[in-house]
Image (cartoon, rainbow, N blue to C red; front, side, top):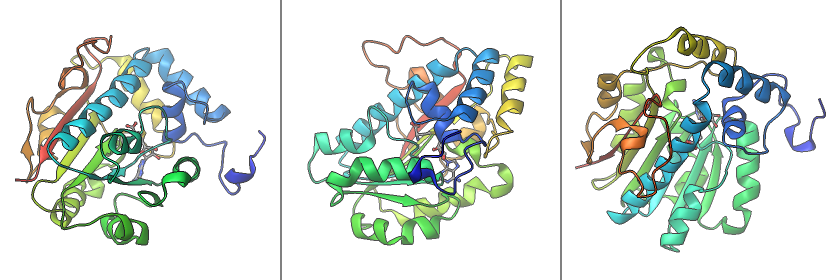
Length: 267
Ligand SMILES: C[S@@+](CC[C@H](N)C(=O)[O-])C[C@H]1O[C@@H](n2cnc3c(N)ncnc32)[C@H](O)[C@@H]1O
């Protein structure tokens, strides 16, 4: 495999969630190992592509909903590789004074993000960090430069918390972010969940993903609702991804895409 200069030091033979997701979305920032894992997933879960597209579409609607209630700054945790419909495009499109900090643990995602936001670096920054260390994320000089913690902040955790196992205490991680932001802030979560029927195919998908850099933890509806502890859940609550304020055009998705989403407001 040819190692691009910007990927120096990265083990490209090991699939990464950011690049597998990029492949599912039809992006070009992925390598043979990522495509092989994605194809294995698609073989057992043909809806994986539609899930990725539906999730990305939800991210856009959720950011717009927060902009509508006055949130102008966003910390996008597990932001991934920037593709169509980036948070900063939506936010800066709505208001030129928006601020966005992209955070990802994956070096390739971070490298691409930095390249992409170079021309708006005064308002958009990129941090390479593990979201499980809120102090590191919140105290990073880039975050401190861009985010005014006396004003509402949108905390985005879209398609990422299923990479945080219970043993890493996601409740405590979320509490640290919640306590750092003022009233009027928002929390956006999209989370892989068990489909209505737990088939052998789905079990196989989970097993397949466990060979990547970050194994999957599926959570139930009550478990996802519990992640919003201390936040007021905006309508329609925690629902399947296609049912959160669906666009008039629809997402054309299958009814049983196994993803739960919600938006909380700090009251
Ligand atoms: C499926 S992608 C989601 C991308 C984007 N949030 C979206 O929904 O379109 C998950 C991203 O989370 C990142 N990630 C996984 N665990 C993480 C962690 N502990 N800290 C920061 N980023 C993480 C991965 O590198 C990947 O880029």
